[in-house]
Length: 328
Ligand code: SF4
Picture 1: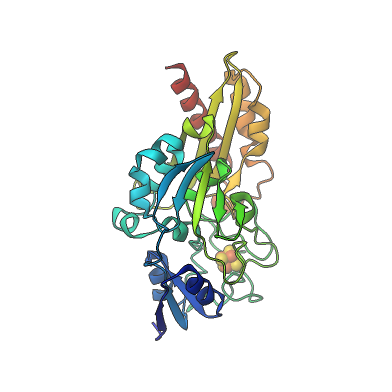
Picture 2: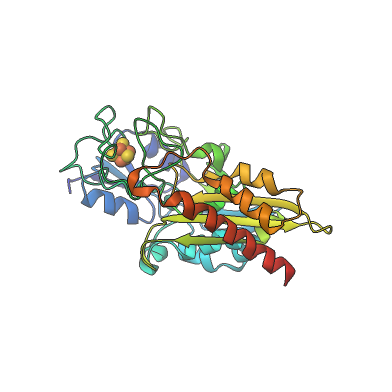
């Protein structure tokens, strides 16, 4: 690991000044930064420590939604009664992420900004070609092993999967990212790779995430997060789904929110499945038909083709589970 200068930001303005300086890495929980430094993907000239910034560790109900400070630790958020009541899917997504040790250290803001697990991205010593790490160098994953690469949202430049869980729940429930100067819907926060995969988030230089807000909704209050992975714990999603549902008094689906993780370059909202079911009586045949839309537009590769069948099944299971909960 190369030497770097260390600064502790005492105020948000100081943090923004550091964030605007090229070659600066921001330190919150540090779990992701240390990981990337060890594999020599992150080699910052300066590290700006945000951990002592005041006022970013609050969880509070506000008019219209739940406010989560960017420095709240994942483990604390996962067990917090306010989050568990407002959006069980988000709490479950956090609880199913990483290991207990990492959840105790990692922050919500940092979790959103985590980097892909693409093995080529994380191995610069052996794979020079990675447009995300070195723009214009190519993509070693095209033609390589793609077991966990994206089927949705990829481009000729990059097919790396977004690895997080929490952001999948945020995408499903139209959460908002706050920077203290502006508010961005999560749908606008994550950027498709296109020709510029090195630009993953819509943050401008000098912008720092200060909080996240999950708008109040009946679907968020009745929600769940299901995660399939290659081993039972401490593993990233092979496929995950955040789902929330509200039934009308007439038995029709009044609201439905769905997003997939593990299959796309960004948290992937399932608008087509939602549109096929909202306003309808959820019969078994309609559920099957609508769930099949989950992977519409997918571009599978030999190693990840199995997800074409698995993802609709997981979506179907999540909706059924929520319907059974409504009936109980
Ligand atoms: Fe790099 Fe993206 Fe290709 Fe992986 S998929 S090697 S992150 S450009």
